[in-house]
Length: 328
Image: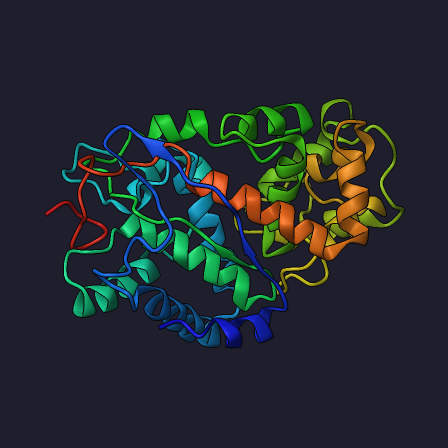
């Protein structure tokens, strides 16, 4: 069984969100694999820890993978599917999925789970558990999530991913609309963006702030020197805006509330990061989270459960894939 006492010592905070989702055909629930695969959480945790030892940036990749899967027809692991013929382009063909990685890592963890519990645990649930472990291993809260998702039987069109995934230069209005569709409050929407505390931002998502002040810059000047930092990492006219990047905050490998402190100081890298402290709808929550780490962790945990439970397949819907990147 999972050693919850040890995890509590490591993380400092464990959050159980009283939330479950009932949909046509079944529901998500806590303890879903208690009888069929009680060791699944430990297997995923061990897998993520091993990957992080060899690549400390893995947690950021796993968290982003979950976000991109869940925002296109729900958390159904469709992002893992390879094209089933040469004429078909998978979800990963979307330009908005550039830089999404760790798909192979989920496949490795799935093979470990299959060895212990054949045909019991979906790839969709493994994505959620891996993202949850990525947060924990980076110093964030341990969110207890309901399980029971099933995998999609076909990948969506890459055009659907293009349409549903938010652009890198999204502002506050667009951000609130995106997360309201997942049932989030403004507080939760601001909290879920705290995931930017891990990882990087590609220059393609930032250049509009430098090139189009009327549409890209925040409503007031950023901290002196921020433009210089961005321009140094993302030179205008660069031929490689997709591969160049800047760090989201100084503690890029640690899940903390530094992201909000940066935003309050005018150091927000992305457009939405810069606008949130200035918008009267979101500013109070940015201020709160910047000064109260546990308050941020609590709101983030609630938002994480809502996002990971949105539009899922359960019960007799979908399948449990034996191999995550193909439908057997």
